[in-house]
Length: 188
Image (cartoon, rainbow, N blue to C red; front, side, top):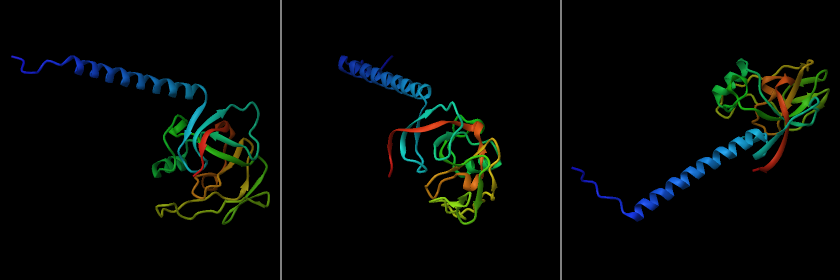
């Protein structure tokens, strides 16, 4: 014996509308994310660069000093530790990291001096102070002075808490995905 009350026509219509609305919303989200991946769109949720929507512009040449780029960090011990500490987000780069948005400040053959801040070929870089501890009081290792080798770039962000080459050193140019172009951003 079924003791459930039969559904009224109004309830049935309301349930159908809810199902259609949820289905359309899910479909639009899927289309949005697919279009974003195909169109090179990415959402930046870290303060290293303005928050919001960015586009990856493929490069047909080498990255230049001063250009802001998307880069896949190398899959190494420093990056895995950074991921465990929460400095890096999960993503589709090798090692399961999300791409970083950083500015190229040194290229192969340039000298990087690391003291309490960064200098490139003797020229101090603004907003490059080296932090000894992260926001949770954990010690930070920093990069050593030296020449940027062929096939590498040195990355920086003006945000004091940025995880950039100050701490992990130069990265392979093969990890550069393209230029980072702001689409719809907000700088808090």
